[in-house]
Length: 240
Image (cartoon, rainbow, N blue to C red; front, side, top):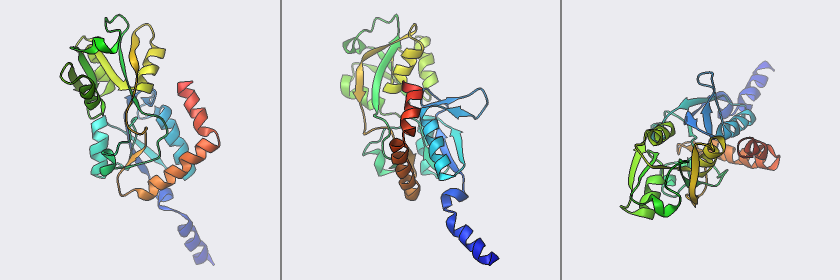
């Protein structure tokens, strides 16, 4: 009898219950990911969504702070299982990675200092534009302005905004949700320039291609948290 119970227990425990999921994240990508005062403790829109998914999977999730580019490379080398960082789903990226269902529209947005003489899109010509290395924004800016701008990439978003503060760049392009968050939180320092620019299919959780079952589970749970109102509650927490 004891052996039967043990067998059933093992049978019911899926691989998701049996192992920790290692998730590469951006340590500073407000409001999607932010590090709390306590080291290696993170919160934010995507973190809260992932925590809800992990709770429902009854799985331990371990967050590993990385640069945007490192998330991609470490997924390919199987050093992490999932990637979070307001990552836009594109057909090109789907060649090498799996994605969850999109949980938010993905856009780009220009943002600069409140006292900048850049007031509209046309004013960006012949200016220095900063963006995060490995993002889709370099291609987006080049498509829009060709060689009429200089694009300078930095490993992290904090370095991009530091470059803006130091006068090394004139304007930043980042995720639409992030740009709005910066302006709402610091309306005396920053302003948006132009409208949001659609990019990709939406933000998704990215995985190594060996994790098809995990992504299928995540997709089911994303639909569940949308249906029961949990997603909307998290969304309103960060975007009002």
